[in-house]
Length: 69
Image 1 (cartoon, rainbow, N blue to C red):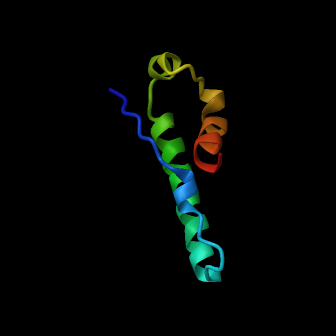
Image 2: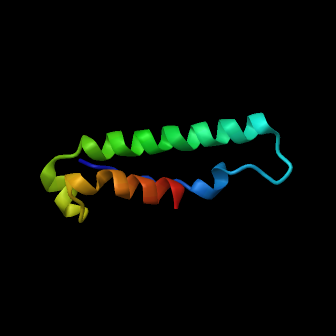
Image 3: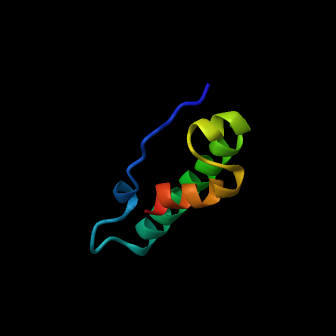
């Protein structure tokens, strides 16, 4: 069974005037979310991906759109 999660990528960005380190941490967290999204989609069967309207070749593009907007 597949579960969907809704992540708000805009909440990852730092506020104006934030420190360099805070921005770096935010980018790292965003990248880790991208990797987790790819891993979760990759673990689905072809049938489950098809039910979601995806194919294996579109996993990375879907993850980029979901995380980075």
